[in-house]
Length: 401
Image (tube, rainbow, N blue to C red; front, side, top):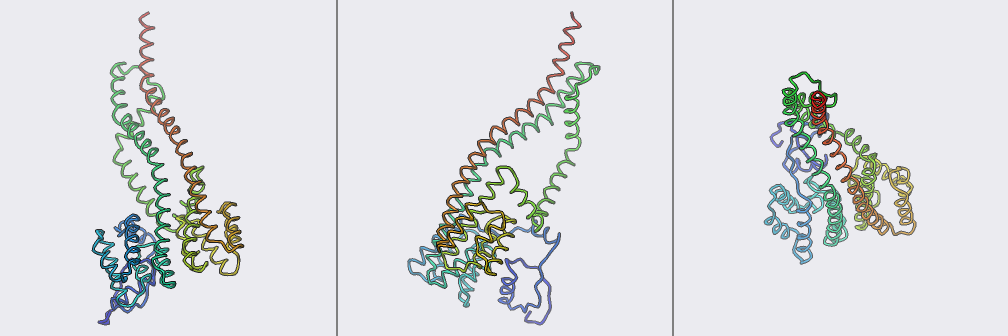
């Protein structure tokens, strides 16, 4: 501090360099920056309410920003207008800080990068636009990229809504039967038979399960909540995220969709960056996180390192064994002919169509499977309920004869 006092504090930032810039701007003399680690970091990240800027909101902002710049307004004046229109407090605060940074001499891309709220590809696109003097053009490319990624995500979410609702309704129905219906039936059957008749094994197992749930519902609920919390802590660790992403890629059918989605995001992001004149190695390093999968991220970082050492990109990608043959071949053609950007776009367009078809196929299979599962479970419960009644009724008929 300017007073000479040495203090230790915890801050949240996108990168170490961004944190150093932020602290130095506040007149702190930074002696050392250490990354928080272990379980404490995971718990902190779990309970911290992070400021977020939604994709749709950020897309609208960039459309307005591009229109103002194309109209010839200076960046500061454009930001002044856009700040007034923002309802998101975190977004408004970030834009105000960006405006002040630009006034103090920072570049637009550096000011956005320092916020830690926006994708790395965005700051890189702005930097490319600043170098070429075509910020509006790079904003247009980023807007096109964002629209495409958002449209794919909408398709995935929209396709999975019905199966999720069906599963939730099945779970609720089974819960009602287990918690309310079966105990009532068990008491009724015991009274009807005078406690002399022995229940069939299936019925006894179901009654035992129902009693267990009713007696230990608090412990079960606490265990479920604890399990979710532990899972969220684990999934935020590097090893946990990698293990889960690797597991997702091995899921039948769904794993192939996730693989195609990661490749599509990688190729589309790389195409956007290379089109802006960003060097291939730098573009690869930025694109690694855009794939949205830790397995791909680690592999792409290795690809960027091998490309830096002089190896061709398609050969490096082929060695990861994560990309399909079509992608590798098209990248090979793109590098050989100098049309890499076009080939990357073609790959992502083709994969987007393939993802749409595979999702439709998966949903068409999931729906009947969910109905069959629901029918089996509910049918088993009903059989456990009515079979003892039928057995008692048949026994009374024989006794009457």
